[in-house]
Length: 209
Image (cartoon, rainbow, N blue to C red; front, side):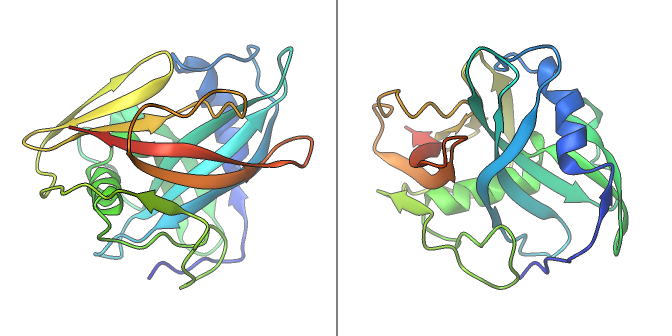
């Protein structure tokens, strides 16, 4: 189980995301986001080496707030071949230098996303150690083989992860409370809190045959 440390990060995750988000094709805000944490959860790395977080943030820099879903991984060493997916580096008060990556490009995170969608791993609370998060719900788990090879494509609405020999995994990037749910049956849904303090449940991840 991952251990959540009560400590500082410099720069903070929101600071790094403020610089990184405008470079994404699915970002719809102003040139400089104004971000606030809105929700999220974690998954455990079976090897205990990589932190895996699914962060939900709201940006109110534009005409109306937009909420984004951001899978992130935290590593002590560089991800081989992962320079293109680096969000930034931060000094962790306990663990030292951490390299933060877009989790959709990190094989450890992708393997655990597949495991979650197949019902083979348990979502964990975002801010507490060894604490399952029952608010994260997997609907109609799909059978998924081990993730040995995959390809990633960022679109204007989401990120697709094509697993060789397996299902197409989708990271839903913009969480719109007014949008109808996607026409898929294999999903991971989780709650998040909007700027008006309303709690909304959205699809964060899905699988397609």
